[in-house]
Length: 185
Image (cartoon, rainbow, N blue to C red; front, side):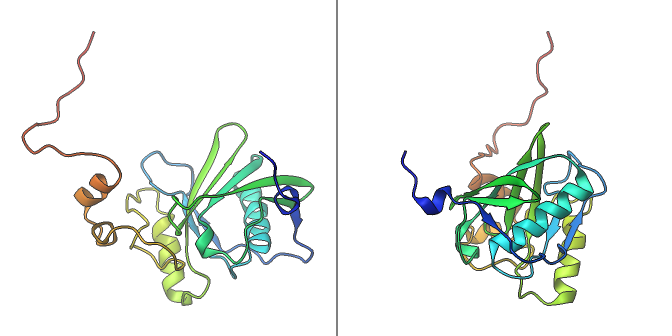
């Protein structure tokens, strides 16, 4: 695949990025659906992602290699950004919810964050980040928090109906069949 010069370019933040407005779960939790909340100050991905990578590296350690975002919530779409001498690849996926960012890196590092729209009021954004950072948080992001504009999930998912969420994620509930324990050998 031949890539354009813009796709091969590494974008670097030329000014000091703002401190990331980020709240993480105390430690990675297998029960929580998200690992915290992130409230960017703008829709400029170069500035905001540099800030986010710097904060995550300091708080969680590990080397961040890739970031996955939904393109409609951002002003431009760089494919690579330079942060502290390292290159982080950025993937733009229309299938990803606008209110989610996924960060991956070395040693099985994966951080899923709820993205709160930059124009959200302070009190609402703070409450949303607190809710997203609870270790017992099992609430899906869709419709639960203020999000950047973009394609939305089906109405049933916005309403928080767990059965509808399961159905729209590809699962299927059969009311005539009760769950069974796995067979033991």
